[in-house]
Each structure stands twice: as structure tokens, then as C-alpha cells.
Image 1 (cartoon, rainbow, N blue to C red):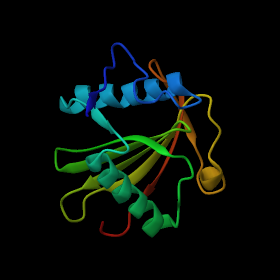
Image 2 (cartoon, helix red, strand yellow):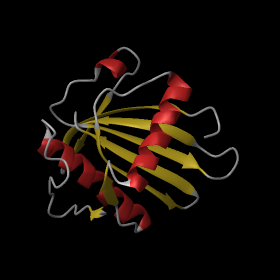
Image 3 (cartoon, rainbow, N blue to C red):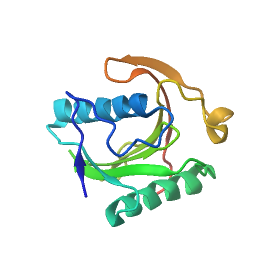
Length: 156
């Protein structure tokens, strides 16, 4: 069942097993606010065991494996996949507090990238620690977010 993320009243629904549950809920709400303000899109997520979420997770994990030989150790909790202004967007939220998003332009030659965001209070996952540098940003909803990204080179 889909859950509409509320960025006014931040809720940890669906993320309760995370050791940084409040920060991860804030990070998810931060993304919801961005897409509502920029694209008037309502950000909804589904539990990782739902078929649509599983397909999104498989797509994201396929990109990580194909582009960077990267496998995420933490179990996924939720995912979402949607289109806004000729961009396919996918998000996966992990138990560790990690959020991975894929921005994939639908037109040939458009911008395509994978972004990583770390919830406030979590350590950089071992699989990312030596491969990416993380910049810090502040968020009223999520505290300090550390983020990094890489450009997608192949077709997915």
C-alpha cells in the first residue's frame, strides 16, 4: 500500500526498524517537500516487499552494479518511482539511514545520475566510504544531510 509522505508533520511510518528512524523520516520528508514545491508532485512510497517497489529497487540496484560494481549491504525499507518533466526519478530508502535516488532523463543525451544521501547520525556505509566524498547540507526537516553522486554513463 502506498504511503503519502507528509513534510508538514514528519512521520516515521515504514521506517521504524532504522537505528536513525527520526533522521531518515526527516530526509524522506525533505525529498517530499522538494518535489511538491518544485514540481507539484505528491511523494508517495511503498514498502520494499510490494511488487512496484521491488521493481524500482531492482532497477536502482542494477544501475549500481552495472555502473560501479556496487552492492548496498543494508536492506531496503521503501521505494518510489515516478516521472516529472521528462525525468524518471527513483528513490530507495534503506534501514541504515541511506537514501539512494536515480535521476534519469527520458530523452537521449539528457542528464542521468545516482545520488546518495546519508541521514543525520549514520556512518558512511563501508561499501561507499572509500569511493565517494560526501558534502554536507543543512535541512530543517532532516538536520545535517551528507550527499554524493555519480553520473550514469550507460543506458538503463
